[in-house]
Image 1: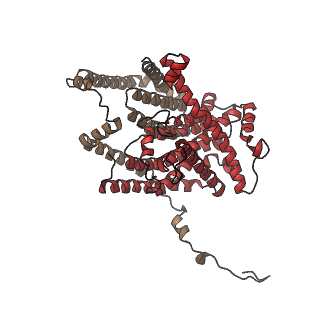
Image 2: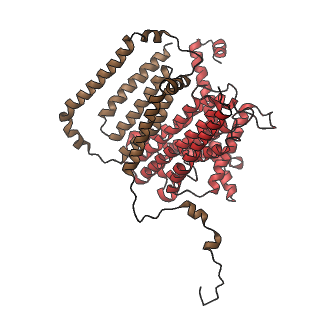
Image 3: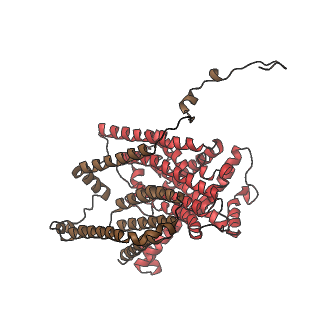
Length: 339
Length: 202
């Protein structure tokens, strides 16, 4: 692409490389933001269907333009900064949430060779970015100088740190079967068999931990509206709130993407549906997982906080640890370790 | 390329500045946040020298876990900083001594690396293309340094058990939820269907 730009626009090669990188970033982020907007629409429609309502129907055909109307509304509202708030941290927190949700997409492979940056430690990068997500929340909770927000931030910090541990073990099991930290290699290793079949229990553990990691129902205690008003974003309004909202939905999309890559074969085609091109396969898988996210929200009641901690530390952690040992034992005994 | 050099100076400058701010910031929470910024830039420096595995582990372990707990604790503290700064001059000599000792050690390590006999040949050897740095580290840790590595793991385990022993206290009279008991309840044990006639009660 850089060569093409250098040839046809007469740019020097270094500038052409820079322009090419920026274009690639835009090719990922712009559809991502539109997808996020449509996600909120899908969430409202699916929840409405679960609750026998109609959902948004007024703005645009079938209410399709509703998310954009909501976005416009948020942009024109006033940004209120509470008098007792710590201004700098208060304003930086939503930016961190949003930026972290976006930068993680740099390593997601959409197809064979279709990846912005094909780094060797892709899985670790994703894990690092998703474990940083907690900072946006804990900083906003502290900087708001409000009891509800602070409690929400603390809950979320404890919750995300707890569930990261089991996510780490699940990732280790997958890595044992692949022998590489590169995301494209992980997808290639699933050409014949998706990992969700041999590692089915880990798939379930990972998906449930993903729900907890993104603060989604039934683990949405950080913003539990029945007791904490709005949790960590109680004091946020207008675009600062919108950034949290965007970040939250994009990290949900990211977690779905990660589940698809680790367990559902990424861009590999569905059985019997080999004619669908690579990137579209990944998008379909992400949409299916997003549907499950919403389905869970429409079905399950919220966990109590001590039950949430018990599930993380006393159920998932030992369970995934045992699976790591079983998997490695199996691989060593049958001499199936990848080299 | 000029870009890596620029990136190096950016990371290094922000790292030093953040490190300074950690100790000069008035608000302890700001100190921790600057510490996190410093970790980040250190990870950036690691990426620049091609140690991407170490960089990612630094971010995951220090920024993702240790610093979160740090921040967690510092946010809960109610420290009077004017009070804390009172002894500044009194503790200054001790602080300077510790700083000097650390600087001397750092100097020793670096000079050992620069002037040691075999170091030149190690530096002259090209980095092998086929071995990733996760693999290289693993090879070293689990073969040559296996015992030291396992021993440090044991030390951490002891520290963890120690922390649990120190903080665990069992209180009497607390009703705990036993999920197994709840799941073991059967309909026959707890539900009785009775026909109640009007005006008589159960």
